[in-house]
Length: 336
Figure 1 (cartoon, rainbow, N blue to C red):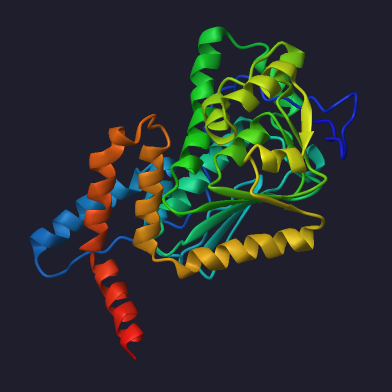
Figure 2 (figure 1 turned 120 degrees about the vertical axis):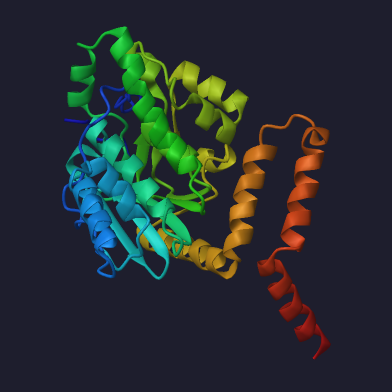
């Protein structure tokens, strides 16, 4: 059972580290509705083709069914993962960790569920933003102890293969095509801080504690290191990776891990809702362009390295249908 994260600084901080991950889960949700088969009846040849298509569809794996379902509108049912709560309302998708008794610690199954859910939401054109949070006192305590015990019996090659699943989870969130908003309802450690790092913006409660305590167990925060370092900078990563110290919400804001902190969860909901409403006022294609642009410019040491890319981005945006329509409305309003 994963230990409880501290609510304030302590001489004995929580050590719920995430280790090198275990085998990626082969769990695929089996509650997806069957794919519809449309058989045309105009000609016999058409019917034979439809029969062939029916046979082909009947042997689809559950993984293929999940991918196909992701392309459908939300008139169909959402996936029903075991350890997550998913919802969509008014164009906003929500992914909430639902293992409160284990402080939302994750194992290989949770990792797979998060990756599949994020990809599902990303395929939906009507989604404007994704909000990630957790039920209970903690946001995420990293890896659970049961997973760590299993990991100890795996070979190095098995751990390398398994780590790909953990990296894919973080990557899928960071590369999500719409804004990702972190609602950090409590403490998080190790891989939990990695989840915060891949959000486009994150808001949290003041009493939440953070840390990379892997070194205290002889481990390293390897998989999350590129994502965290991009977010908090090399100097901050050096200190907290090497010492395993815990830090509070105020420090997290100074490190750019969080944008704002508040006292209560009600205030937290207000911060998140304000960010959601702001995103919904922006034009969808412009937001997607911004995410692509940020991905390119964040790694540029010299602005000249991305000169051609950024001037091309604004040129493409100016002649897009979305920009032409919005600019026309804006200019016409100014004339009145």
